[in-house]
Length: 292
Length: 296
Image (cartoon, each protein chain N blue to C red):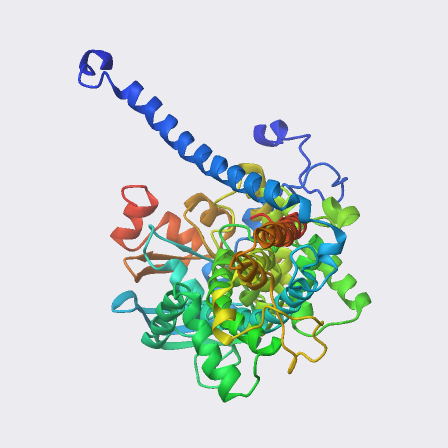
């Protein structure tokens, strides 16, 4: 008896498979197409305004003279400070939850809350930042206040990514370390963190990329859009950021500013691509000798 | 000269004299092995290294061990055999408290190492694990160099001097019969070694902390026959220095390497005795059924 004698019921299986492949492929190409369209639109619109002068000038009332210097520097400061705050807190939390906290209702509760916090709209963190950092802690509209607010936004993402990376380290490595008489501290520092590092770094950089693109929480804490100086005191000076500056320019009635905004988007994209490339390179470099 | 000896005439009986360049496996002849196996009387005269008294073990509400009392004698190989899920690995992991790492487990009863209860309050688990080393079923080298793998135990114990580390690493690798194969590439990643080499590296790593007792959880089950023979020969040589407890699914292996065998079934210790006797004249019906392959 041959199987084929009993398969008359599925004459379309082959076609169904082909159609499904086409649908999935189509979905992928649709994404690529939309992305390319977007890039083409932004580039063709902003190309003329893009120059060294644009990057090296402060904002202006005149579109031709407007530049992005203070916003770019502000954004770089913000990212660096946000990384400074979010990495130790986020990775520390992840280590505690994964390696130290005993299974309990308390841990489950914290875990669920972190997952939920990752989904909270960033404007909500902005309002929290306004109340907590700007007003209560009297940090005003300084870089520190902005970075702390962005830290709130990215912290859940950093924690989840770090937890995921720690969980991906095989249990056999932990067991081997403990069985050799290593303490928990030694196991974490000498085995788990080095093994989880590529994953943690990728997560951190992706989270920071998100922070780089956030405008809403900065609007909420009242960050400025017209800053004609570079911040000198991170606790006091007002600052601007790329998405804020772009948002401000698109809001202007003059068409010239729309072109400047497009050029600003190109700069923002370049920084983002740079960060993502860094994530890929770091991941590759650190994971070369890791396989289980 | 018997026929067998004629047939095996040109097979090297011990690799220690001849070059150990190409064959990692040190073939000990059946004869030396027989001689090395200890009889019940010989086992009994040796001091009790580990004594367990009425061990009950629970995973949550699930009882995995029921009143296990077993003595492990110094410089003997004790094999734990039994079908899957009979509790032999759980028992093994009680001996260095690796079960502590699993949430919601409870141990009752006493486990004495050199007469001292290892579950009493204030026991330094880290210290205990340095004295009771462990080798796992699946070789689990760290994603580091061969040297760093072996040096990890001494390092976490606080050894800093390079010279001392070098010495420990060489000694441990020699004991694990791996030195000749890796001495020229100690800085290579341990992950580039073959499966059998990795397992011997894990044994060397466990030896480097200078343990008294070595626990082996099916150390050869994932290895090919040649590597298995190498590991078995190793166990044979190590027992003069260490006290070894080995969990195995392979009854031939238990018969080959162990002096004493304990048969576990459904969380209970059914029978324990000198390996020669247990395999030839089992006292219990269940033991007999198991070793003759009627179940399990």
